[in-house]
Image 1: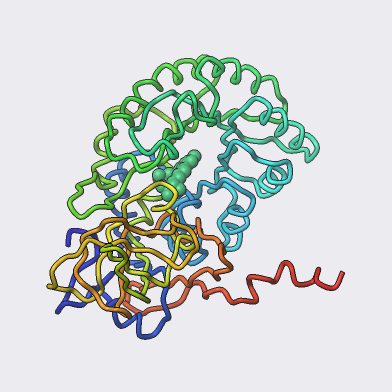
Image 2: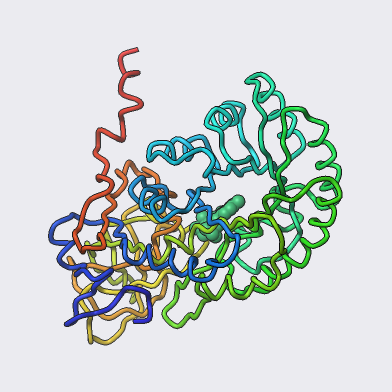
Length: 420
Ligand code: LLP
């Protein structure tokens, strides 16, 4: 097994130093399982490479926003990249100071902007001139000055899934290169706006680093334009580093990534920001599910598990490949199977035509690389309460960090309307 922190010891799968089988004996499946040890190793891999440079990590909260996860990341000294008032609220719950938070997103509402201004965030990444005017209006009303960075759309192909490319000209994100200078000029005319810098985010799950370098090359011109008007304080090069999803896949580590871009980074008295999400928490989480039924229809084998697309939607939504392995190592002959959930639609699958050893009902499967964009994208579709989240601490203690939802959680926002 070449996945970080995962190994079979005497045929039992261990994750972050702990037997997964033992955890299934205490907690009912399905659940997400995270390892503090792996999370810290990922962060340290970034730190090793950035230590002598003025680079600040701003963890992208959207990847996994569980409060206990955020708290561990905050303790390691990272700032936060948020995209909604809800994410800001989460950061405030764990006492992140406003000046460690940046706010991205194409559709910030008036309410969200006001909330962020009141909490004195480091800056807004603005994505349109209309947004700039709205921030000016709100800042004026509150009698404050709003720090902003301009998010530019550099029109670069990150060579990833089309749904998660964000820096191509046909994507909704950022301000086009031809409006960059004009936006700087507009920002400078607004009294309640302080222009601090610019940045971009070209996409996610990027494993071919050439697009990262291309974006830095292209930025030289943006930097030149910016410097004509103001000293560049923040240059934000986004997130997007990919992680390993397949057994045979070799992907760059955070350290490899930083080392490969270092020669292309601008020098001088400025702070370079990075917004990693998946590459921090992705490998630090797995999703555990139990086989409820095994059936063979027309010669096709189905493992029907107790987890479903409402918990982990990436395979259904992006046709994403996640490695799936038994938590007790098997020598039985591999079979071609579909691993599916109980939801009433055919898109409810975790894997199609996958080679897996022959298994039995009531045995457990681990879905790997599920720490990022797993729980955060879950829903209650088919009135399924969301699963629990469990953490293996560094000292190998196991603790619950989110309870499984109850049936009552499903109806709580509706129940009071029954008698109207
Ligand atoms: N910064 C911005 C402005 C972003 O839009 C994103 C991700 C990130 C940072 C973090 O990117 P990361 O380092 O995690 O790649 N749900 C999809 C991924 C969507 C990513 C959207 N933006 C998935 O499951 O693959």
